[in-house]
Length: 429
Ligand SMILES: NC(=O)c1ccc[n+]([C@@H]2O[C@H](COP(=O)([O-])OP(=O)(O)OC[C@H]3O[C@@H](n4cnc5c(N)ncnc54)[C@H](O)[C@@H]3O)[C@@H](O)[C@H]2O)c1
Image 1: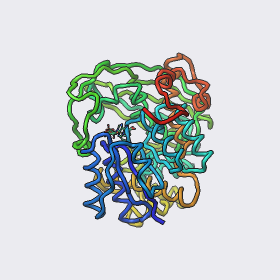
Image 2: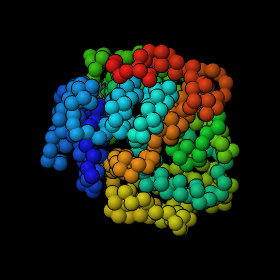
Image 3: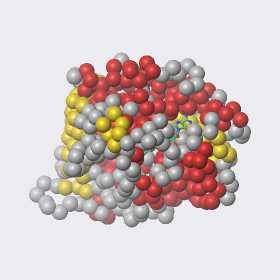
Image 4: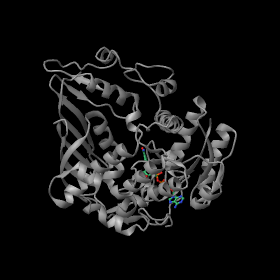
């Protein structure tokens, strides 16, 4: 059965999803893209054109989400790649009329809005998936297998240090400066790290953080780098013409984290470092240190052991995980290879394949009525980890992850929730 899908949000990530959709459609016939929607018709048309060129049919274009929801038939599922503020609004609306939903990360703008989505999905038996791409990288699959197989003994300590950024706005998008639309820079960048740490090391017990805003005004200074190609068609909204935007959300956090397993670690994230970048990703165990791979680079992890300057890397790593196999859908996208310790591919190719896996997992979850790999619970834990840093920073005391998930601790998010009229209510905004 081919499921009919509609996408809302045709900016940078919308285009990347379309490239992933086309990649998925080369190997599987799980979905047909029936419709695409954006406030800006030209952005939606651009994306519809990409589908038409690659797959030979043109999805219907809408500029009003509610109209798409009410009129587009047949329809089975909706995916959401708008800015973060709208994830729950559109997610709740789609779930309430009986459609399955996949939303980009972060699952929603707050835990309260995430719980509202989860509750409707559970009550109606519909699939709710979060499009978290990093963990699906075959190198992260290998990393998890190494940790689970005891390749560094028992993990005890983890370091996640991500220092970079500057004074420009990520992807030149004004909404990322605003707490009400993005939550925080910590969510935008850091939620991938939070999800990966949870994936590798299990649940987090508690977080103690200091947070701050280092860059109070950011510039819209065009877009460069490997992601720029995805944002050329995008139309800026309320910040059109603005060169400088006041930032009202934290861009820096320094945290000490305790996992339920007893692993302790440091998570330091800033997107406001001027002229200097550093990235350290290591897990330290009782028999060695694991250097985590850079997601979406094709480069694999490395293991270091006491007394040796030579890391264990490449195919040697596979000897430490004799049972490691990529799952069927990943292997199909990686030329039927099931045991790899690195791969060579351009960033756009890797990106499209990881998003293709998200689609396929979502589709298989709907059709076989199983949980998607990253469902509501996993999506909320990653969100609570990222918000845990911000909540602790504001409270100036440690917070428990479970309390952030269930809303016992929510002071930082309160301001956002207070502005939303649609948490658990109707979808009009
Ligand atoms: N997984 C990843 O690696 C990754 C990378 C980048 C962005 N993201 C996530 O994807 C989402 C989108 O980010 P982006 O960089 O594409 O932003 P963007 O601003 O480029 O795109 C958002 C699009 O949504 C549209 N939109 C907003 N409100 C709408 C509404 N009410 N109706 C219809 N369309 C509406 C906008 O017009 C815009 O085209 C964010 O939640 C972000 O966190 C994920």
